[in-house]
Every structure is written in C-alpha cells, then in structure tokens.
Image (cartoon, rainbow, N blue to C red; front, top):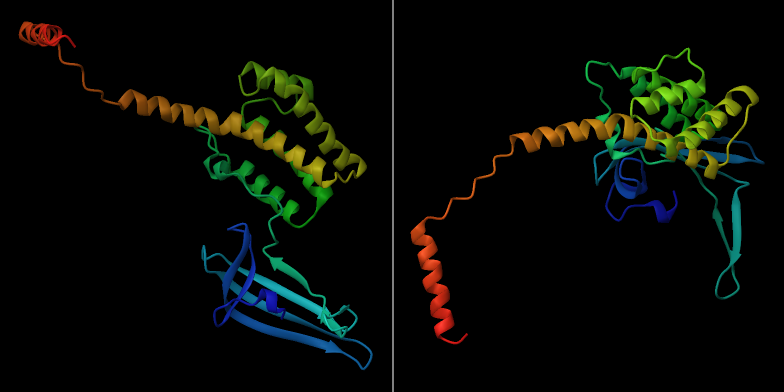
Length: 260
C-alpha cells in the first residue's frame, strides 16, 4: 500500500470517488490480499471495499504490483531509492466523464423514457470502462432513441429526422450540422470500427448532451416556471386618496420653503 494513498485517520485510505469526482478520504469496510508467484516473479493485489467519508458512496478499489514493477531513483545523499509501481482499478469503474446534474430530470408528458435512461446508463458505463467503439455506437443509438420518443418516425431518413425535429422546435438550424457530424461519427464506429480519440469523443458527448437538454429538460423547466409564475400572488398597489395627495403637496411645499 502506498503511503500517499493512506488516510490520516485509522482504518482509512485515500481513493478516487466517482460520486464526488476527486480523491477523498475513505473508510475501509473490507480488505483482502491476493498474492502469488515463484522464485523469479512475485505479485500481490490488495482488494478494498471503501466508503467515501464525503458522500457515503461505496465502491471497490484494487491496488496491484509485482516484483518487476520497481522504480529506482537517487536520494539527496546519492543513495539508491526504490519503490513499487502500483496499478489501481475501481468497480464501479472510475468515471471518465461527469454526468450532467439534469440527467435525472429527463421526462416527457405521458411518455415512458425508461429506454432512454437505460441507454444513457450503458453509454456512460462504456465511457467509464474505455469501451471506445461501443461508446461511439451508444451515442448514435441514444440519439435515435431520443428522436423516437420525441415523436419522430424511426423509419425516416436521417435528414428527414432532423427536419422533423426542427419543425417540432426540438432543435434549431444551428444544431443540424452538429447532429449530422454526431451521427456520421456514430455510424463510423458501428460500421467501420472507428475509435474516436478523447477530444473527438468529448465533442460527440457535448453535442448529444446539448440536444437532450434542449429537447427534454428546458421545455419541462419552462413549463414549471410558467406554472410557478401563474400561481405567484403579487399584492396590488393601494390607490392614493386625496388626503395622501394633499400631504405630499404640503411636504413638497415645506421643502421648497426651506430652500432645499
């Protein structure tokens, strides 16, 4: 176990919490050591069940090393320093992309969006586990599922799908070229095994999340705001009577008489 990963508190260690999105002090709820090898090669893996002390998220971390994963350096007095290079893995997998806060708000009136929720769970899971080709396919698939839920005929050509989405005000003219590129990229992964790089994959996700937010989240939020405004009770301004008007005139006259 590396000293940098040990928590300052007893029975704890520092690890990456996907729920918090960073390194956190965690309580060790369970620990197990696996080891093996022979006279030429030895290895060991620590298994930890961890509970984040910040958000209570529970997850599993493995820390592995072996006798060939040794790093060497020189200390301040010229002495040789060695340490084991460790490999850490997580289950559930370490989040590669933060899920939008609004993801749980996806809703359509009188429409079951479970299939879209499931597609997004698998898509973010593919991203977390570096399943690049599957993530590219999942982006395209998620777009098709969302379009169908929005009332677009799945048998239409892609260009006609985009036209139908724009006619229904789910997308704007500026979104068309972005979504065309998104679908072309997803098709390249599905049919030609294209593996988009990190930057390309991030851009594809940006386009998909923007589409979902505008099509599913913003209309629902606008409806909620409109309903809240409709229920808002604002007290009316009381009309001023003649007495109030006379008092104001006297007050202004008094100020003028004082030369102010």
